[in-house]
Image (cartoon, rainbow, N blue to C red; front, side, top):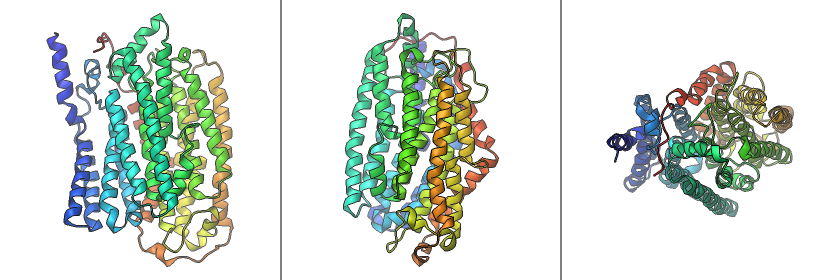
Length: 531
């Protein structure tokens, strides 16, 4: 027995709850909202509890001290939770997304579902935040399930037709399958290393590279990528997305488009060792073929998403394929992050910082589009196809302006958040080192990504053409004026998109700091023996 190591383990476990107080507050508020429905079914009460929970979680996050021993190597090898700067960055993003989703959800929840709906949303927000902080395979898996299980309920509860119920059961069955595949891969990682701690797994695999790369480790991470690929809608694990998007409630789809992507990319970065060991040896370098697989995955996801989006007339299906394409863009960041080895530092972007920025940009522009669709929908008139947006600049000029900003950002036009995000991903990939065995493949993929961005521009320009160049097919509906909260959320998102377009450094610098934190603190310490 080593008293010092035992004390470090005790300190890591006792500080665990301090690192997840905001998440505890969110789950506690979810339980309170469910209990409150026994006393009162008034939606205002449940919305008040939810808003107070998100604000309270933000206050707790602000008060949290992340500069303590959470980064010390000895603690990292024992703690199931690590309060890294990247996790703090993601937590603020998740709380902001949650607040905006609450604003756009009012119309779809109704009086009878507000308690259950908002409770599930709070649990999903807490699960997403826990994924970004997970430093243990069990914690990571449970946190991912905290996102999936409430989503099943959210998809099914508001469903009033066969299409909605079909989309819910389809997502449920395929999500279970992806979870099983992920769990299979994680079990191999545990069997190979003898530990469930992600930092210890990464260090053990790096230490074992002297005797050659383990094929079983490569197989394990392939299964893990397949399981997580379902959540980020990467090709070929995307097949559920168009049907689920089309049949599901719009507010739930907005959540489904963002939260699983945040969780999925953090989970991938954790499993690939990007978060634990920036700019040092990675457990899955080029020799394991994992970076090459990510290269192919990114290329296929971008191409498939953009190409099939061209063929869609239904707006939700178009957004589904658009989300697939944007996942492909973010996968470029993972390809870049796996390119750097010991002693190498990027001139522009390390890949992970570009992903963090793009997650913010993607959240803003996606929520803006979904919020406008919710605002325009009513019981008498639905906005489902591109033709339904014809002449929107005349009937709903504010909504048309919001869609203009959001879609231009998705195209990647200058002075929008999407432009800065794509520029960071493309430049970082183009400047990736060519001496690690991948040669000029990084530059080739960058050119391929630029071509895909041009294809994607056609998709969004087609929608903008219907909005501004065609005459309205129907008069303005008075019912769209009943609840302006979705329009307010859309305006906030469009303002954020423009602000980050003019001043991307507001988020970019924070993303860079969050992506390069512990390299200087996690050194000169022997790797503990696996448990």
